[in-house]
Every structure is written in C-alpha cells, then in structure tokens.
Image (cartoon, rainbow, N blue to C red; front, top):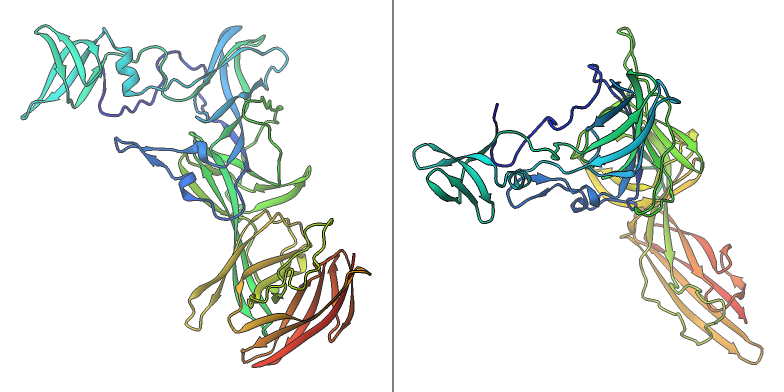
Length: 517
C-alpha cells in the first residue's frame, strides 16, 4: 500500500522497528518541575510558539526558563532473553545523559546493555533526501485537474527533478508527493531505545526517568485591598496561582504533579546528572460514592527547599500554559499600609572612607513618600504556609464595584511566620522635605556635627503615620545628640522616626548627629 504525504507531513506511527510492549498501553506518569525564571512576569516572547516561514507553528521550548524530572511506569513485553525496547512518548528536549531504565518485575535479572536516543524525525525534506534515485509519484495541478507524474527522483534543489519515461522533468510546484514506504532511520517521535538482557521473558513493569528542558512554573498572587478604619490599616482578599508552561515536546497525561520552590543548584548542561530510581506510582482512585475534593497543592519542607504536590492527576499538553490555584483563597487578611519617607538618599557604602564635606551626600530633591502594604504570613491570618517567590498584584474596588489596579511588586521565597512587604508606588497627597540646617567640622579632633530638619505634609482629609528613615552615612562612628522625637536604630547606619500628621497639616522632625572617624 502506498502512503501519500502532502505538504508538511503528518505521520503518526513508527514503521522501522516495532516497539515491544504489552497490549495494555496504560502508563503512569509523574512530573516534578523546577523553575529558573526570575521573580515576576515572564516575557511572553521567551515561550510563545513561533511561526515558520511556511506558516506552521513551532514550539520554542529551549528558551523556557526551567526544567522537569519526568518519571513513567510502563508495561513492556520482552519476547527474548536479548531484546530491544522502544518508547516514543518522551520529551523532544530530553537530556539523554539523565535517562534511567529499570525493570520493577525483575530488577536483578534485567539489565540495559546499550541505550540510544533517536531524534532524526521525519519531515518532507528528509523524506525527499532519502528518496534520491528512487521512484516517487508527484501530484501536480495542471489548471483543470491533478496530474500524476511518476519517475525517479534525481534532485530536490530548486524544486523536484524527475527522470520519467518521457525524459527529465523539472517540477517547481506540486500539490502532493506519494512515497511507497517510510525509509529506515526516520521516526515520527523522539524515541528512547534500549538493548536489554533479561532472565524473565514476558511482561515487565518498568520505570523510566529523565530530565527535560522546556518546562517551567511560577507563582502569581492576587490581592484585593479594602480600606480599614484609618489611613494606615486595611485588609486584603488573598489568592494565589501557579502558571505552568510545557514546551518540552511531549504531553503528560494524568500526571502526578510536583513543584519545587527554592534555589536549587544545577550543573551545566554538558555535565551528566543521573537520576536515582523511583518507586512505582499508583493512580488516584475514587469510589463512585466519594465526594470530589477541590484540587489543591499540599506543601511540605523538602531538604532545604519546599515541595508542592497537587492532590489529583493533571494533564499538561504540549505547547500549553496551565494555571492552578496554589493555596485556597483567603479573605480579610489584616494588612498595614505603611508610608515611608527617605530624606537623605545617600547610603554608607565604603567602610574605609568618610564624607566630611558640608554638602557631601546632601540632596533635598526627594519629596516622594513610598506606599507599602505589609502583612504577616501567619496561620491566624489564614496563611502560614511557605510562599514561593512571585509577583504580588494588588487591586482595589472602586465605588462602582470595578476592580482597579493599585500596584504590584515581587516577593522572594517567604517562609511561614515571616512578614511580607509590597511596595505599591508613591503617595499622591503626602510629601516630604529634608534639609541640612547646620553643620560644623572639627578636623583636628575628627568630629563633625550636623543638624537635619525633615518636614512631612499631609493633604489628606484623614490623619496618617509616616515612617521617616534617615541614613547616617558620613562615618561609621555616630551618635544622635538630640531629637524632637523618639528614634529607633534600624541598623548600623540608619535611624527611623514614626511621625503622625494631622489632616492638611505639617509635622517636623529635627535631630542633631555627631560623627567621629
């Protein structure tokens, strides 16, 4: 029987060497995904399918910032003590150095003596090259109907050149080509091949594991802010999602899904990264009378990382982006809206230097007051779980009920019971002003004294509290001589003041600092 391949070829079976497998094609799959993506939104161009010049879509998986460990349990049928096994439903971006095969039925008596990864996939161009000096049938539209031209293929450069009974014919356009068979050496899917010796002929349950590129995940958090009783308090409705990209070249059906959060060190692609064996996987079963459970991730500590395991199988199609809820949504999580003013932007950078010029580091141009939302990742707030790094996007409902975006920022991996701080932007109605009002320098005794005045103006209709941060940047040795407000020493080079400002009023912070070096 002849097979007709027209245009860009679509072939769904491997005809070269049969794959020895039992009639039961059921397999069990688990996939553990590691992300190398930076925190925050991923550029769609890094994973969006590309389009070839012929108009066909192609995946761009090599650019996806992540990888996965895939584990499959398959049933295979070994007919001889020395046999060959082929498995074709594997990722196109597999790292062959990480592949391991193991018989669960006869682990001691069944060994792999040779392993191959075949990826010479069939295409129209490769078929034509294989058919040089062989007979083909070409379909050509002559204006009224299709004409069949049969002959020996001599060349594919600049079209097709055939030797026919009527002589040599050059064919520049055609509607299809008929090939008598699929040439040896070409396959339709990336295929793993093992030469195996066994002491048990018959059906085996075997496990396969490998690493593949083209898969990643990241976390996004959606918060809806609701104002509290004053300008510095409120609550948020908290929801979280993970997005998973699969452009590895394979589909993972009904797979057990795990996500790893943490900074996992990984050797360069040139180095081998052999994987250990895995336990046999069992599919989740549910009786007809069971109440379906909402899908959710179970989180736990794993080595120095955190592992998130979905409580039901999931299918990850090739060339897809899937979103799943990370933790159940939580309402009315208490938050603090913190306003922060940093008057002197200069920070102390060099332990071996000091800044004693009167105007060194003085810049009174900053008037912006930062706006941050702070919440505690604690169980009593409905949270209290390890949160992977991701983007926190905050919205607020307008009086008409519509959600409006008010800011976003990234968080790092955040353990439970730790605080989360999200910078949303700058306040509109609260501004600051900082200036130097006096400075004296005693070079003989290596002493400088400086007086600073900070003003906070509040044009709101309600009172606000502003955290004023001052950088003690001139020298490592310093002390506050006097201050009109109580201060807190934040660290070795920073103090802060909590300033209350009445509606449409101004508050002033003054202090005098002595530096020694």
